Image (cartoon, rainbow over all chains, first blue to last red):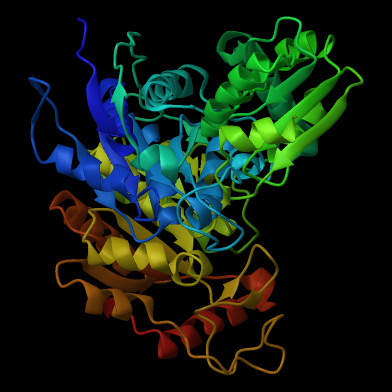
Length: 347
Length: 221
């Protein structure tokens, strides 16, 4: 079935993708700039016929993000495709439940809508929740994190987030921001994948005792070694990146999310001026497309990181870089970045 | 009973858990039952009973069971927690589950202290009671859980019982599960022994519990 392109906001795209992925339950707490996902889900849930099909979408507006997160944990253990969405200080609170999902390998999907930080910061935009999305738990950061650049990708990666969360059982984040969530674009919803079925962890037909605390150091060590092995196996199958005009480039811009959109325009402009500049964009920030970055980095003179943070993406790049190459960048925490500024920085 | 108890000698948890299981069995609910465990001594129950169990986080068992119950409405969803998990770090979740009348059952084991961490001041520490973190005697007010929950929700089943009142414990658990089947929230607080942290021996442990009953009134609310 080919779908017409639709004119949608980011929040509407997330809701459509979640429904198409088979999600039937959302738990959430209002927080700018992610509130519209919850309110649009609830609005959509008022009708039982969605796209001509009977659906029973359910929801609970909880007392805080902590309850939203743990209710998601309970709901997915009961076998339902549930999810949550949050932002900023809510992402901080969500780490409690996400850490339980880390420990118990729960298919926990959260749509994180980045806003400025630290603290209450600003309410619309940043790229400062990269560290929280990946490393926010008190453990080993084994999470799948997607960073879409536009609304068609937001649809595609939200679908993939649900499928891969249920397939591999690692907490999965779609990392977006308030600009992406509130913008309205023509969106291509033609992304066909077969949904992975959800099964209850416990039910009347099981007798299971599931824990997240271990008596002996070795027991936890063995569990984590297995988790790491599973994560690395998953990495081969899910890792995603985009390289743009990188052939014979001397300066490699690295950017993610909507900043990569501006970086693409900057590459076009700089190449017009005769400069040898290309773009590498990690789409999965975790697992990071390490081999792909290193392959391109071998032949460049400089890596130039562009991000709306003081260096959270740069740190990921440096962690993964295995070739000796200069790393410079344009860092504007919680501020939007336009193509012209990138062009200016590189001329 | 499936496993050897991991609890300290004289601990009240084993009494609560054994009667929890016998009441479920008697009501034919042991297959439908899902026991979520808070962190603290409660977590030691993770493989004690031959029913579905899972551990959660400290203070988070109530919202986890709220999520579970909404997705498996035919289950008997039980949150098992200590007094700190219920009334301090988990109060927000407990308060709202009760206020919304979510049909889950929360069992709160009240021994007046944080026992797993060695006996610190808890929301249920009695006036003047000395603990690790109230060495000159507790001066803060004592949280009355069932009384508070009653004030939030007229439909809920709410009771306080004690591990040395087995008939009362069984009756309260039975009514709590019936309330859940009828679609209502239920909370059963159980006054329980902690000889390890109370530093009591033999009959002193029972005397401590009897003394608790002067502060915490038993009954249905």
